[in-house]
Length: 231
Image 1 (cartoon, one colour):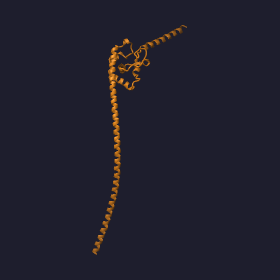
Image 2 (tube, one colour; image 1 turned 180 degrees about the vertical axis):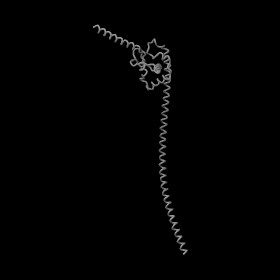
Image 3 (cartoon, helix red, strand yellow; image 1 turned 90 degrees about the vertical axis):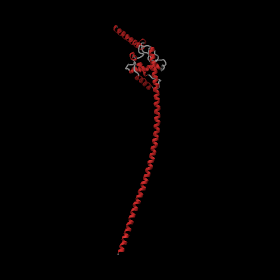
């Protein structure tokens, strides 16, 4: 009937509009890998782009925009966090975030909004952008090398300290063992001297008593002799 046909036509038109809107939105998406429009980086069939100064500069710029409070779209966030085949992923991401914090976000970066989300005619001059990205990429690469050197120096210093601590611990263990042995020897010698002293004291007391007894007998004999003379 007429009502059914009208509803069906409306549904078809709505579906076409939805599909058309999705296609338009997708056609405006630019791939961060090959820079072509119509797909995202994780769907890209082309080889991974070289991790040159521009590559690092774009990642750092996204981090700066995120630090400035600019909301990144899903494609930008995915590409920023994508560190496949890169050594020490968490450390590299931390370096990007560190660079974003220590560098001021330029007014141009904030005003223009997230990169690669507008039509070509709405972008700033490509040459200027490439120059800025190259400069930031070189700065980032320089700072990363500096951080690597500092990390290596820290590791070497920690290794030296660990080795020194082990040597010191072994030395202290040896000295402690020597102290225990010497203390044991001194304790044994002291016990021996104490026993000898006790024996000598006992002999002294015995001799003293014997001497006293002898003196008493001699005194008694002398008194008896005197009494005999008087009689």
